[in-house]
Image 1 (cartoon, rainbow, N blue to C red):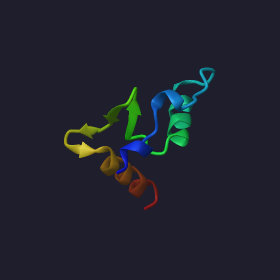
Image 2: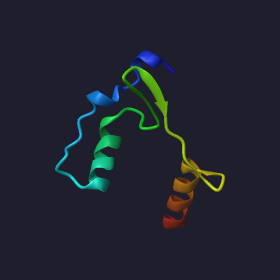
Image 3: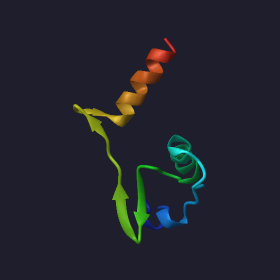
Length: 68
């Protein structure tokens, strides 16, 4: 991963008029990688676990259950 290509959070534009979920979706659409980005040149990596289950596994399970 090229650190110089990570998005700077302050440069991501999100409408303050939108509600919570809409703002989250706008953030995801406007950032190249919502799991790793920079804040004032510090690298921030977002991870999620729920009883040892990763976000990716959780999403995969949800999608699998919807499209059985």
